[in-house]
Image 1: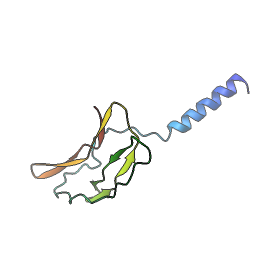
Image 2: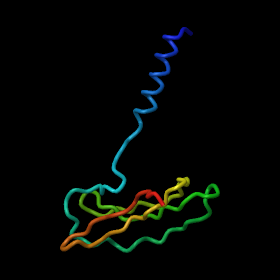
Image 3: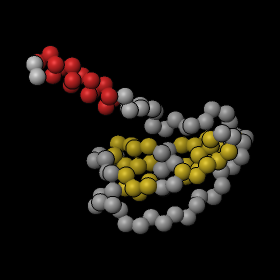
Image 4: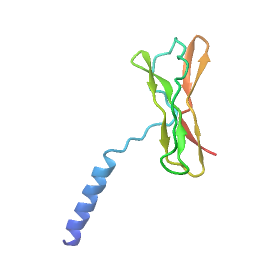
Length: 107
C-alpha cells in the first residue's frame, strides 16, 4: 500500500471510531421542565464483587425522563486515577426538585 492509500485508510478508520463518540456535560440533567414530584426512595441493589480489582460501584438512581421517574441501575466502572465518583442526588429547590452529581470529580 502506498503512503497516500495508507493515509486515506487511517483517516477513514479515525472518522469511523470518532463517529460513536458523544461529548456531553458531566452534570447536566436529562430534563428541561421543573420536576415538581419528589423522587421515590432508592431501590435496593445487589452489588456483588467487582469484575476487576479497583473498579468503582456507580449506584443506581432515579432519573426524570418523559415526565416521570425511571430507575437507572447501578454498575461497576473502571477506576479513573486522580478522580472520585460524585453520586447522583436530588435536591429540593423551592417548589421543584433538581438532580445533581453523577460525575467524576478531580479528587
